[in-house]
Every structure is written in C-alpha cells, then in structure tokens.
Amino acid sequence: MRRKVSPPSAHGSPKDLASLTIRPRIGLGHWLTIALAVYLGLTLIQFVVFNDNWKWDVVFSYLFSQVIMNGLLNTIYLTVLTTVLGLILGVFTAWCRMSPFVVLRTLAILYIWLMRAMPPLVMLLVVFFFGALAPTLSIGIPFGPSFAEVPTNDVITRFSAAIIGLSVYLGAYTAEIFRGGILSLPSGQFEACKSLGMPPFKAYQKILGPQLIRVIIPSLANDVITIFKSTSLVSVIGYTELLTTVQTIYARNFETIPLLVVAVIWYLVLTSIAMFGQARLEKRFGRGFARRNPGSPKAALAAAAKEDLAGGVK
Image (cartoon, rainbow, N blue to C red; front, side, top):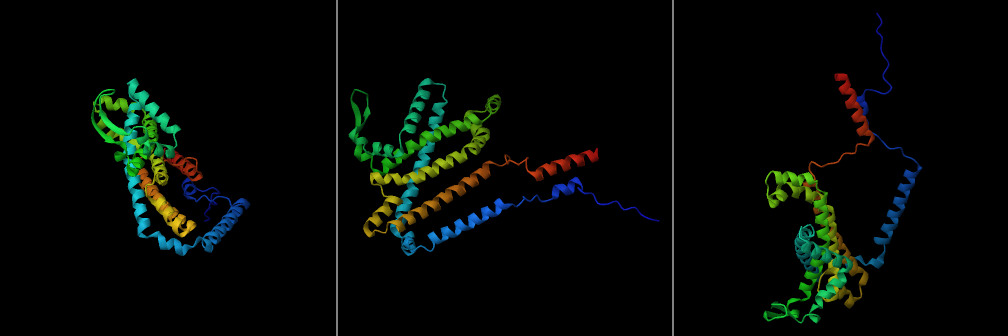
C-alpha cells in the first residue's frame, strides 16, 4: 500500500510566517554608509586621541581639581534652584494664562511676550544693574509713605541676580509647556472629574497630572538642559561657576583648549545624567501608552496569522 505524501507548502502556515525574521536587503548604499562611518570614525580618533595639541595630560590634571569641583558645584546649585523656581513660576503663569479673569490673562501674556523677546544674557544684565533704576527697594503705598526700605545692591548680589534672571526666563517658557500639555488633554477628562465631584487639586493629582506629565516631560527636560548650559552666561556678571572658573585658570596659564575641554567634559556628564533622568521619567509615566509599529512587516504577518487562525477556529 502506497501512502501519498503531500509536498511542503511554498508559503508555510500563517503561524510559521509570523515567526520569520524579516531582514532588510543589503545593497550598495548600505556598504557605502558603513565605509563612510568607518572613515569618519578613524578620522575622529586620529584628530582627538592622537593629536598632541589637545594636551590630555593637562586636561586630566585639572579634571578633578578642587577649584574645578567648586565651580561645578556652583553650576549644579544654580541649576537646581533655577529649575525649581522656574517651574513654580511656570505653573503659576500657566494658571494665569488660562484663567477666566481678563487681567490675569493679560499680565501672563505680557510677561511671556517680554521674555520671548529678551535674550537671557540681556535679562541677567538688567537684573544685575537693576539698582540703577531703583536704588532702594521699599514696601509702602504707591505715591505715598513707605514702611520699609533696603538698598537694592544689598538684595541683588551676583548670585541672586543669576537666580532671578534665569528663573524668570525659564518661567515664561515652562508656562507655555504646561499650557500646551493641559490643552492636549481631552475635554472629557475634565468633565468626568467634575461629574465625580473631584476638586481640581485631587483631579490633577490622581487623573490629569500623570497624563500631563507624560506629555510635557520631553519639552521640560529640554528646557532644563538649556538652562543648565545657560548658567555659563552668568560669567558676565562675575558669578563664579564652571565656565568662569575655567576662564580664570586659562587666563593665568594660557592653556585655553585643555581647560575648555575640561568644561565640555563636565557639561557632557551632567547633560547625560539629565537625559537619563528624562528617560526614566518617560518610562515611569508612559506605562500603558507604549506604541507599536503596525506598519512593520512582522506585525503585518502576525496580524494575518491571527486572522487566519481565527478563521480556522470558526
């Protein structure tokens, strides 16, 4: 008795097709890209590693020196305080910007308009030399007697001018980020919270806040990193941070490039830490919102396999 053996299917079952690995076709452009990447990599290594003009021995001798560490700590301290105050000011400005009161909306719009038109360096100089406009800061009745007065230069020091100038500048931009995040939420979310009788604070804490944070994290992280780099601008008002420290050192020993490399290395380190924190926050608040690529070949085969299997079960 002969048994009839059916030849194997050319296409295979849908389940087998879905498990196949899709490999892109390798053409001439792929090899040219690899060759260009190798060439640029070797050129970069030759320019950076084997170029004695960088003076890497000088770089590593100053990288962890005490004076550089003090300037780095001042930069971190300035960035943290500026970020906290700027975010608080941004939240308040966004609330005023979306307030039903015309006066609050107008003041918020004027503040954002002014900060967008003013460079951060100009803002720092205006705050630092504010004593030329108002020699004394007083509390009292306008056009009337004052109850307390203090010299402006006693209040606005180099450090306070840096904090005020950068915080006011950051607050305007974060206000628009917060407002954009709120506008991105569906209106039904707000209506549902109101129908449940939830107060605004609890609604933002439990329902609206996590969704809002997920939307605004990339933009906020970008602004925080920008402010971190903008702390180098406070050198114009004489505040000693990382860049000011580096400039003071190379003004004495004339090792300009190695000292600038030291500053760049620490800026890269702190920026990398900030980007790592951003990634962790995005992962934390992005749970349940992971996007899949429905247009990939493997996803299409998997979908077709599910449909065929479902049809076979029916």
